Image (cartoon, rainbow, N blue to C red; front, side, top):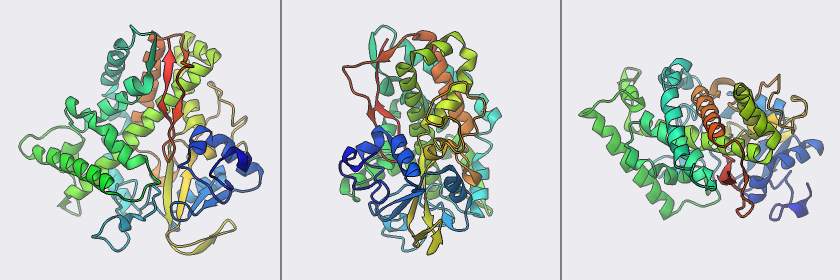
Length: 409
C-alpha cells in the first residue's frame, strides 16, 4: 500500500493512524504491507507516541510480558490514564480504571477471580434460551421488509439487551448504552472536552444510582454478585464497580456487535459461504471461529513500564503499545492462506480473544451470542446481499466493525 492511497498518513511505518478512515476501511492490507516491507513494529507520534506490532510472534510476546508492559492503559488516548483525572498524579497500576483488563499482576488474578464464576461456560449456558429469544424477537420485527440496517436493528441490540439484563438494567434504558460506548471507544482523536466530561458524568451518575438501589432491592445478577465480593476483607468500592461495569460495556457489547456485523457482511458478500451455512448449520460454530480470526475486532493497548530497547526499537517509559490481534491472525507465517476466509478451516488457534493472563474472560458469552445471532439470522434470511444504495461504514479506533450495514433480503 502506497502513501498516495492513504491521505493524511505520510507512512504507515512511521505515521500509523488507527483512528483514520483509511485504517477502518482496510487494516488488513496495511498490516500485510508492513510485514512484507520488513517492518514488524510500526510507530506514530499521534496520540502520544504509539508502537504497533504487526506480527504474530511479537504480538504474542508483548501480550505475555507483564514485566515490561503494563495493562494500566488499555485505550490509546492523548493523555495517559492517570493524567485524565485532576485527582491523580501517578500510575493507577496495579488495579487500573477497568479491572481486571486494566490490572497488572499480582492484583490481576484477584480481580479476574471475582468475575470468573459469572462468565464460566456453565453460567453462560444458562443464557442460551434468552439470547435465542432475543434474536428471534428482533428478526420478527425485520421480516416484513425487503431491506434493513442490521447493525442498528440487530447486531447492536443483541449484546446490549443481554448485557443490560446481566447488569439488572431496565429494558427502557438500554438505548443509553450506545452513547456510553461511543464515549469509551470512538472519537479517540479528540482532546478531553466539556461534552465528553458531561457524558461521563451522566454515565457515572446513572450507574451509581443503579448500584445504590441494590441496598433495598438485592438482585441475583452481576452487580449483585460483585456487591457480595470482597478484596482483602473489604467490600468493593463504587469506583471499582464502575470501572468493571465500564469494561463490560466496552468488551461485552461493542466488540461482540462488531464481530456479528463483520460476519454478516462476509455472508452478504460471499454467496457460496452463505449457502453452505444455510444448508449445513452444524458448520456455523467453525465458521464463527474463522470470522473471529479473520475479522477480530479488538485492538488492546499496553504502556511501556521503563525505557528499553525492544525488538530493535527504542521504547520510552509510558509509550503506548497498541496490539491489533487481527494482525496476528492475518500473519501467513502462522496461518496458511491467512488473508483468505475459510469457513471450515481445520487448524484455527486464533488470537481473537488474546493471549496470556488477559485472555478474554467473556469468550464463552461472545461465542454463544455470535453463533446464535448468525444461526437465527440464516434460519429466516437465506438469501441476502449488500444494499448497493447504502455504503458500508466501518468504525475506526480500537474496535473495528461495521457502523452501518444495510442488507437486501
